[in-house]
Length: 87
Image 1 (cartoon, rainbow, N blue to C red):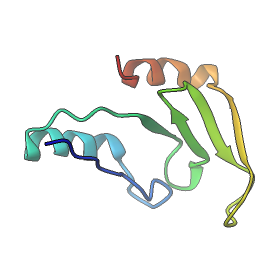
Image 2 (cartoon, rainbow, N blue to C red):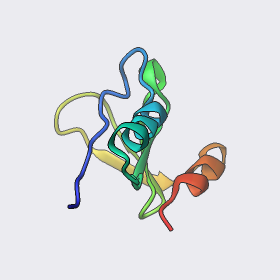
Image 3 (cartoon, one colour):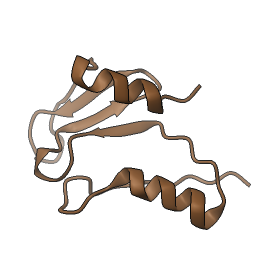
Image 4 (cartoon, rainbow, N blue to C red):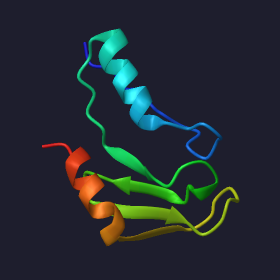
């Protein structure tokens, strides 16, 4: 039966989404498909990389309803994003 899991709070201290994905594999014996990765963690979190559209998505500020900024994936994230992108 299909399931969906959300890993949130990447802006919090100790955030480790890769560890969460590994725990899903180990504990649930599942094969998760990652569709977004964070751009930074903890206090350096600025947005996400959408691996389906292969775009960087950031927000203007931390307020509710802030404008979403969509741009190309920066070179610094491109290799990591390519490894995680669904095939």
